Image (cartoon, rainbow over all chains, first blue to last red; front, side, top):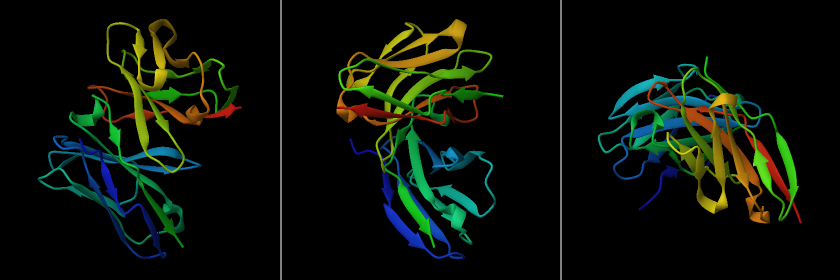
Length: 114
Length: 113
């Protein structure tokens, strides 16, 4: 079956702009979580959605938001981009909430803010 | 608070040698335990997971991990490392009593020819 698909793979944006990243989970998976990965901070949890509801949110400013659609596809949005937002953004899906059955990750979106 | 510790930031082993990557967690009960591998510029791939039962868990690519409750550890092992195993490895904990996954900081594995 198809894996977790993230689009786009690479993105270059200018400071102050906003960006939307997309994630299509594995068919049948209702939980989608987003992580930010940087060399200095490692993997940091952004938020989790389960059946269109945000279940949990990490310690990120309100500029970071997300949503999940009825088909479980998810988007995350970052507004007023800052240089420090440059990172690999990973989406992960699982059948159960909080990934208790193990997450399947996408290949990520590499965001560069200039 | 829950935490996951991977004490080794970098490890270098020779091809064909055995490998053990360490992972310790801090949590009152036994969590669900996972090992992931990440190749450069890619997402994370699940190697194996432990929920309960047999404390020795077999995974993909010839990896195994052993859960030791007394040591709060879940170390990853491979008897003979291949050059293609060079990657970064992450230990993670989660479970129904957790509000999210907790990842370790990762161990970068370098394989010498």
